[in-house]
Length: 135
Image (cartoon, rainbow, N blue to C red):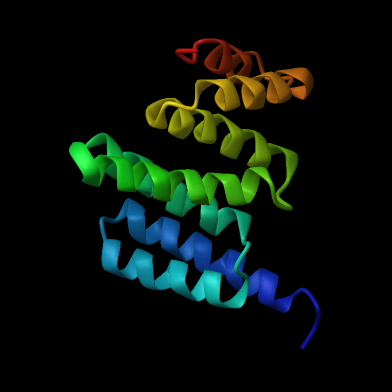
């Protein structure tokens, strides 16, 4: 077994989960994410997908269920933001983490994260999205 195999297996499982999501197979998506997290608990791709799903779910809920989904999304996006993902993964996670934090009322932290991303980001579209955050 090579050193990269668990990481590659987790990334493959995360990609399978994404495919299942696009096909509306949420149970299969969750099983694939479980495989990814079991083999590589900090897999950036798996956390980005799990965070996106939780964020989308939060947008459809109200009350305590909405807050719980927001906290779950925040957890997954924070794992990538504070972890070992690529610059692109970290920037995406940071943007999505800002959205989570805004929903949870932590605008100061969201502003600080947004400002960190703005320092190095080169995409005009991404820059505009960050500047359009309701902060």
